[in-house]
Amino acid sequence: MSDAQRQEIPDYGIDAPDVVRRFLMIGTVALVVNFAAPSLVALLPVATAESALGIARSLGWMGWSFVATACVMLWGSKVGKFRLRDKLLAAMPWRGDERVLDIGCGHGLMLAGIAQRLSSGRAIGIDIWRNEDQSRNSPEATLRNMRLEGVGERVEVRTADARELPFDAASFDVVVSSWALHNMASREDRRRALAEIVRVLRPGGRVCLVDIRHGPEYAAFLRDAGLPAVQLSAPNFLFVMPTRTVTASKAG
Ligand SMILES: C[S@@+](CC[C@H](N)C(=O)[O-])C[C@H]1O[C@@H](n2cnc3c(N)ncnc32)[C@H](O)[C@@H]1O
Image 1 (cartoon, rainbow, N blue to C red):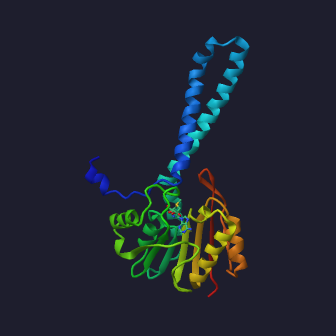
Image 2: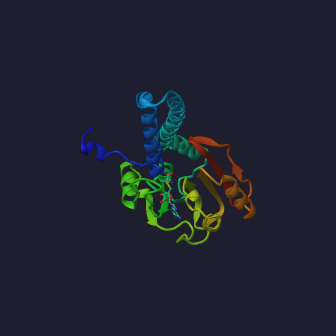
Image 3: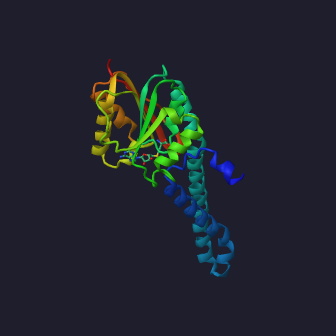
């Protein structure tokens, strides 16, 4: 593939790239030790060699599991999350004129899928563009993807923190967030972000939160905030850790 062709393909990055890299490195080292062990222990006394080989066998199992986990995570970033996005968006009713907010939009996975369902509506993504959460993360990369997906005119991106949204109350018909809120380590920060979601959502508006952690916490918060019919999905293991989806709508 030429550089010119590569430049024309959207790039949605890799989630948690440091974790994937670390798992691949640890797994590879463990497997190399496991494969080299029979030659390395040849010089040891028999009893020591036997226990060294036992350790090497355990390292082999550990190596395969680390490499397999990294591969599943890569598959999740490149394939699995697109399938889940399409399923979730297909299950939502769209008029085409909605104003939609994507919190922690990264490279625009949700934005692209949503914008394809809009006509006069707008999809707005906010993010703080952390590279440890998604590789090569920047507003320019997201806008480039949206242009390549043919939805550039229906999408805006802004730099903003989920805990302090720069939008008026009741200004969005739909708020979504995928694999982003768990990046706020403190429960208090996540509660601030959830309170902001409830604030900017219009009466009758819908919310859809996808995440690898804290699904029950999000559902409980939204119920306590008075949103009716909050639903928490069964887990899906596309990133090894259980991804769950919380959906709800604000009373009209
Ligand atoms: C794993 S990425 C997921 C990106 C995108 N939603 C997707 O599904 O591909 C998590 C994103 O959340 C963003 N993020 C983390 N903390 C945030 C915060 N406090 N406010 C806004 N965005 C945040 C990161 O910069 C990153 O782009």
